[in-house]
Image (cartoon, rainbow, N blue to C red):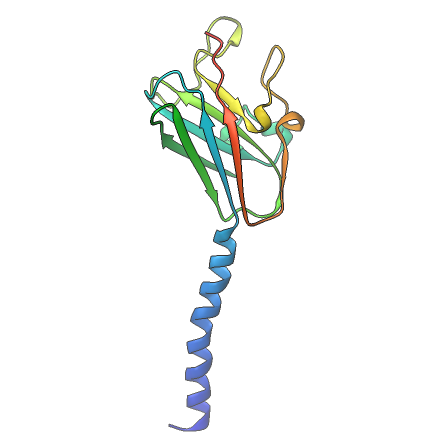
Length: 151
């Protein structure tokens, strides 16, 4: 094998591990949210990670990331992987009847549980992004949030 072919093999051999290391670094950036205070284990917890105030919490389709997880013994944990450093807020919804919808009753009052990062609460409406926001600098960030129920 000539020197050029050998150099090519060495370069190609190194490219795989470097890419894997870069991917591992991106995946290491993770936000984990443990939600507590569920009134039952029915349905699922829907979590959405937002970086825009105008989308939080009412537009989960515009979230940076989302997760739908099982509730067990009054607890559920959402994990968002590969998240870039920045300012975020998390919205939580206990989809108790498992219909994929955020159910509300008279005057738009939620009939299912809700929660937010920093346990932000709204007054006559949902919490603001400002009240729920947190800085993420990278690595692994663990948050806790309590679910609340109006009815």
